[in-house]
Length: 255
Image (cartoon, rainbow, N blue to C red; front, side, top):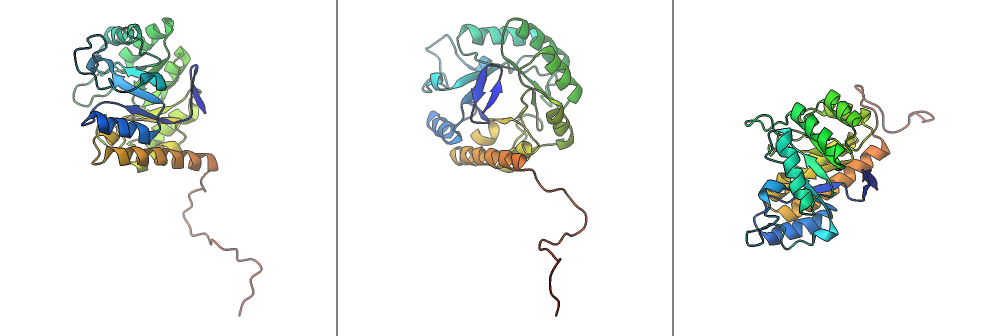
């Protein structure tokens, strides 16, 4: 079990609900992942107009912690407004604060993100900001009172895996709140690496929804997270630069 604010989770996989080809595939992937948290972009949801398509219409949201994000926001003001829309619609258990600062790389704006978090914390939200691999920003946000930090592995949707494992490790080692790795994950290898570094969880969307077989990939990501977490808890052997015999040499007889 781990906690974000007042929420407790067994699964360390948070699943995005965009980009699935159809509802059946989405439903099966959700089941295979065994996630307890569903995230979605509020601006892509029709929370009030029931006549319009809703990708989660056939999902029993009462069985999940709903985790809307403020994707599409470019200012703190926009992010706050999106969060309040989700809250008024009753689907804002937690809020992922995402404020994009660059249209080409889709990297987050640290200044607007900080301002949005400040206001939303004052309003009583459970706040989880999406950030770059910036140790100082992560520390400042923690001091502000956020409930988790969500550093990217690499730019959104690239599938490049963890571009900067050193900075990510710095954030994890110094954080006193959960660290959820978000964006850029491509394969189970990537989630296992992030978990071995000590991450508390992984948020996935494209890596599952755009896989050739999203259901199998959801299962694979779940297992990769389990393996990585167990490896982290077990403690890996030190990296050495000379060969070390795997069998003891003391007490052996020689011919």
